[in-house]
Length: 218
Image (cartoon, rainbow, N blue to C red):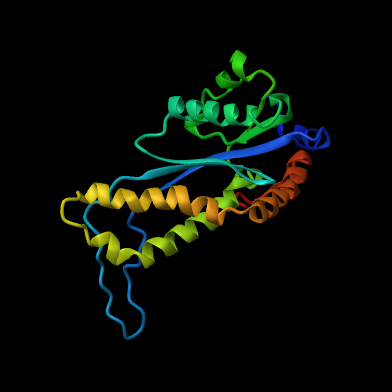
């Protein structure tokens, strides 16, 4: 597996660097406190409901792949997501020109197995070490995205709480989660945003190569 010190070599070789990660959230993103002279009303349910996982992959050009899914996201699910994403890349160009950067999350435990499969020969995987979110270009992108999701959920709070007749609460709320995952993500995550955030990580790459202490975060 390539080391982080290979990052500049990948850039010099004009390889396409893909930053892959996951985030998750549920429907209840709201304030439960009051401002001055305003009554505070906590309308949160006793159950937070199901989470949706959003898997995103970006390059300097923008969003390369994204999906929203319910349920657990374990190593088997993560590996299948990587397969789907890399297959899509194979339709765009040779696989020996791409490098997939991902973190050390438990769901990525066996991800190298995918890159050893005959179908994906040529593609490379660069796994980051623990406590290094500042080296993954998609981390700050997720921060911008989740702020947009919070605004969307807050603006639609009344609609979320008003469940139409004939529809279950779960199905109704799932529509808002899927909209946040499948519509808001590509709207917010522009090529300009991706380019800025990825460029920002290379300052930390230089410090990592020099073995400098760094503040955890991006």
